[in-house]
Length: 100
Image 1 (cartoon, rainbow, N blue to C red):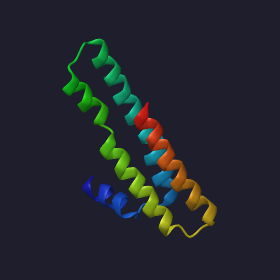
Image 2: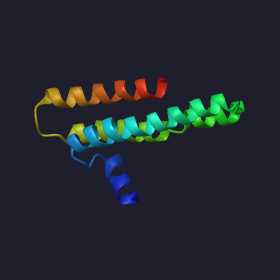
Image 3: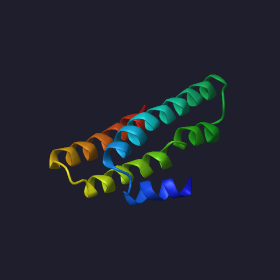
Image 4: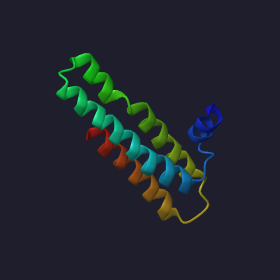
């Protein structure tokens, strides 16, 4: 597990896997789950500290994945347009997921 996280952090995971699997798919699942948790906590009248913790829960993963895709894109040998789109798309996607 730690080896996979380190490989992601260093950008040693192929760009398509870092982007489509870890950013888009797993990022969506994690952020959707924490959003549902947040909504449940709101309806349960949870206190502000618990709500804040639930809101901040996916942020470390989001930061990891933005860095992972950015670095994987830097190693990508294919067309430059995919590098730019992957970087831009991941940053935009993680901002949208975190804000929702």
